[in-house]
Image (cartoon, rainbow, N blue to C red; front, side, top):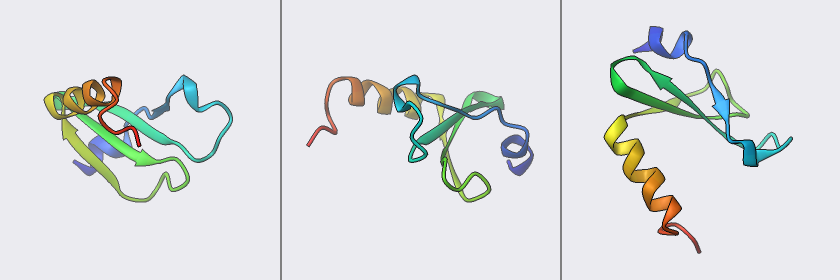
Length: 67
C-alpha cells in the first residue's frame, strides 16, 4: 500500500481555493481512494474502498454532515 501512496496523484477540491487547510484525495489502484491532510503531505493517509468513498460523497451531497 505504501507504494500506491508514494506514487499517488493527490488533488484538492476546486472549492478549496487558495486555502492550505484542505483535504486531498487520490484515486489509487485496486479501486481504492486515499485521503490526507494537505498540511501534512508526508503524514498519515486514510484509504477507503471506492464503495466507501462513494457512500461518503453521497452523504455529504445530501447534507448528512452539515451542522
